Image (cartoon, rainbow, N blue to C red; front, side, top):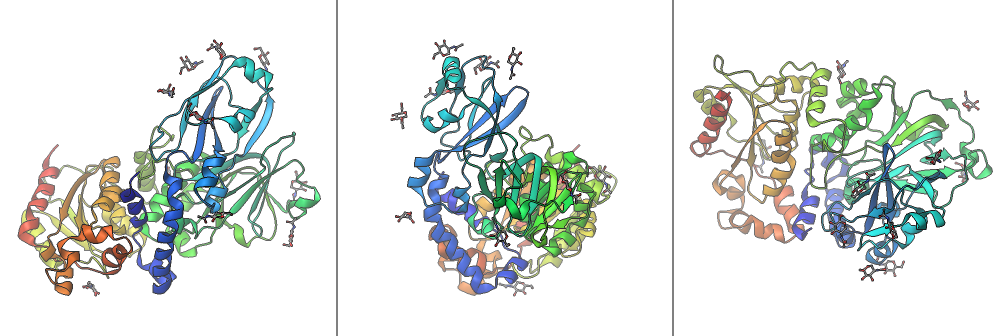
Amino acid sequence: MTEKNLYDTILARSFGKNDQKRLGYGAFIASLLFVFTLCTVFKPYLSPLPIVELQLSVDAGLRMLRITEPQTLKSSNNATSEEDAAEKLIIPTNQINITSNATITQSLISSEVHELSVFNDTNLLKNHLDSFNSTTNTTISKEQVISDQFKMEKPICHKRTRTELCEITGDVRINGKSATVLAAIEFPFSGDSTWRMRPYARKGDVMAMNRVREWTVKLTQNADQSENANFSRCVTNHSVPAMLFSLGGYTMNNFHDFTDVLIPLYTTARRFNGEVQFLVTNKNLPWINKFKEILKNLSNYELIYIDEEDETHCFTSVVVGLNRHSEYFKELTIDPSNSEYSMSDFRKFLRDTYSLRNAAVATTRRRRPRILILSRGRSRAFTNSGEIARSAREIGFKVVVAEANTGVASFARTVNSCDVMLGVHGAGLTNMVFLPEKAVVIQILPIGGYEWLAKTDFEEPSKGMDLRYLEYKIAAEESTLVKKYGRDHEIVRDPSAVAKRGWETFKSVYLVQQNVSIDINRFKPVLFKAFELLQRE
Ligand SMILES: *[C@@H]1O[C@H](CO)[C@@H](O)[C@H](O)[C@H]1NC(C)=O
Ligand SMILES: *[C@@H]1O[C@H](CO)[C@@H](O)[C@H](O)[C@H]1NC(C)=O
Ligand SMILES: *[C@@H]1O[C@H](CO)[C@@H](O)[C@H](O)[C@H]1NC(C)=O
Ligand SMILES: *[C@@H]1O[C@H](CO)[C@@H](O)[C@H](O)[C@H]1NC(C)=O
Ligand SMILES: *[C@@H]1O[C@H](CO)[C@@H](O)[C@H](O)[C@H]1NC(C)=O
Ligand SMILES: *[C@@H]1O[C@H](CO)[C@@H](O)[C@H](O)[C@H]1NC(C)=O
Ligand SMILES: *[C@@H]1O[C@H](CO)[C@@H](O)[C@H](O)[C@H]1NC(C)=O
Ligand SMILES: *[C@@H]1O[C@H](CO)[C@@H](O)[C@H](O)[C@H]1NC(C)=O
Ligand SMILES: *[C@@H]1O[C@H](CO)[C@@H](O)[C@H](O)[C@H]1NC(C)=O
Ligand SMILES: *[C@@H]1O[C@H](CO)[C@@H](O)[C@H](O)[C@H]1NC(C)=O
């Protein structure tokens, strides 16, 4: 992982109005500074193998077992809650039947995915975990396994690249006041019995995670004993499973709403077929209202703001956190090799939920294709959208100009009725999730080093949605920054040099606003290309 990448991750926030409003300008800048401070501390976490993650294949079911390599972790950084959580939380169960040697292989060692793959047949066992040497492959012999009297381990909490989640069945009691999930385990167990986590699927992003309430998952043999007195009475017994997740983090930024919450929520909740109780931590009424249709279609029950609950809620099955199936730098995507659902399932779900008619672009041979020009209000706005619209009409498009500030349901219908969506880099482009397949997305890149973000946030995701992608990078003259700073200012001449200076980047790229005045002659070929793509097949 390079500096650049780390840096870009942090850059990957595109803050919407609400974020800035909520934080206030000063706090916003302070928090950006805070991220930079943390970066140094945080960096080792991203270096190879601070955390050893092992995936076990036990009989039929795949189980994940997560272990920290303690020396590496302690020596490389001082734990934030993120790292504190890197304990193992496993439930030993019965004796096991050993049928062959177990081999721990190491893979992806230098990639950002700290996952060791896998071995078959036997179980990896506790005593050996402590002595496990992560720089070599280790084979544990059958005899060794037996002599050590290993126990079968049933992990309940997992770490994945961008999320953590616990899946607990049994007697589970949830207390909102103290942010505790208590799991009563009947049989004796050893090892750590608590796990701290923040149930928001953007692990590794310090600023986001700081805005997420921390929860403790605690195993106990006796849920009714005095140290658990606060949990002992189940005031409400629920008959369906629960899912506990946060609406803190970067919610209310449309991009983050989808990539951090809605897609993970869908892949985690869909299998319950509505028979699941949502427990929301970090209550966020505007968000709940914004996405009420989706929430309603994923859960048949009125959601509970668990932070406000004095009394304990009891369940027989609980998922804490949202599963996010993606590699570190992948957004708006579901890795199909890891999930029973695909991005195409998610998009179909959205179409069903919002009654969107167009699954794919219909032939444009006998009609004028529709282009949606996404306008933005405050920054990165088109100063000449009228001219763009005229030019598109000349080419043969029907033009819709709209800003994504109406309700989601109505905007989703607008987007779904179009064949092309054109917009400047920003959270509004996330609305591509509503486009029919084979539609064309045109992303406009302002000046100032947006390339990596543009690719990660929208270009790559568009491919996973079966969309066609075109890009237009504006020339310096097309940015209002030229008017403001002059042609010779460094930010105009060499934005990447500015970007290298760290903190300055935020000032120049994000906080200094620019609008975009498209040079129609230069841009026209892109519109032609979009038109032509729609004629094909
Ligand atoms: C980490 O903690 C140790 C002891 O708690 C302290 O001596 C050390 O300075 C800390 N390091 C950093 C980078 O904060
Ligand atoms: C172990 O294997 C034997 C024979 O295959 C089987 O009868 C027994 O039930 C197994 N025990 C467990 C705990 O799976
Ligand atoms: C570990 O196992 C993997 C997969 O079997 C293999 O590719 C790799 O070379 C092994 N590494 C060592 C150090 O033996
Ligand atoms: C276990 O893994 C080894 C090597 O990866 C493979 O040759 C063997 O067939 C596997 N055994 C089972 C039971 O899957
Ligand atoms: C782990 O294995 C490597 C390679 O064999 C060795 O150099 C290193 O000393 C070992 N580390 C520990 C802690 O055993
Ligand atoms: C299991 O490990 C032992 C000791 O390392 C070795 O002698 C034996 O051949 C291994 N068995 C298999 C099936 O790999
Ligand atoms: C139980 O709750 C009370 C009040 O909220 C708190 O003061 C006390 O520390 C809690 N006890 C335990 C064991 O958590
Ligand atoms: C909830 O279930 C527990 C265990 O089955 C029972 O002891 C308790 O009385 C129930 N509470 C309510 C309010 O029904
Ligand atoms: C909910 O989603 C399913 C598909 O996931 C769809 O069949 C159904 O029509 C949707 N229901 C509502 C009320 O939106
Ligand atoms: C960009 O355009 C918007 C809307 O017209 C305006 O409010 C804003 O001040 C402009 N910003 C810059 C930097 O020109």
